[in-house]
Image (cartoon, rainbow, N blue to C red; front, side, top):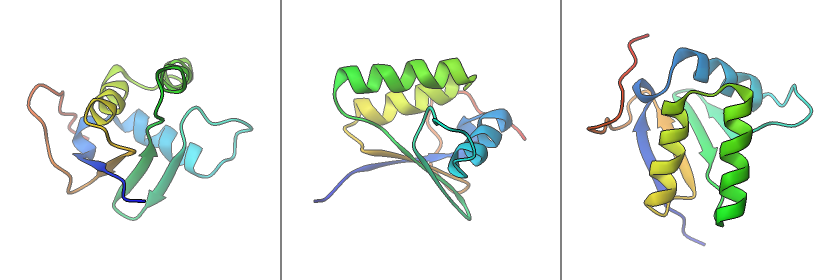
Length: 102
């Protein structure tokens, strides 16, 4: 199966989002609001297909304290038919999406 990823800069998420992604990548909590794989330059975050699954993920991420901007990254990935959001230190920046300086 060939899948599509959204390549997006880490600048589009807050430092707090990155800290939560670090924590959830370690699976040190019983249930993680997002499925994430951490690598040296960033993260792959799974974007579920199906409206109900995606809505559940968004609700869980919001409940865990992820920022509106992080949720916007997930929505951008889903809108473009991507299976993963690749949040990378060298990723693309997108007009209309907030840039965090950290």
